[in-house]
Length: 91
Image (tube, rainbow, N blue to C red; front, side, top):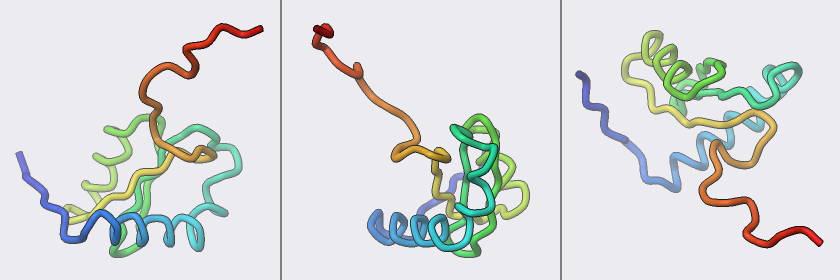
């Protein structure tokens, strides 16, 4: 099993990942892929799209073994949600 280490700070990872997604990738993947996952190599801009995080990251690592992946859920602000949506009852 390969142990991969990040080469950038969390802030730099986010900056690079967001930049690639917003400037190069979003317009290519958004139509017809709502809710799918995109994994972006923050160094090259190479990306893969799949339904699951493990699938998309495996595909990216097969293409680029040293990738530094940034993960985005297409059409959403976050990849996953933690906790309950609301603890209050409606009404």
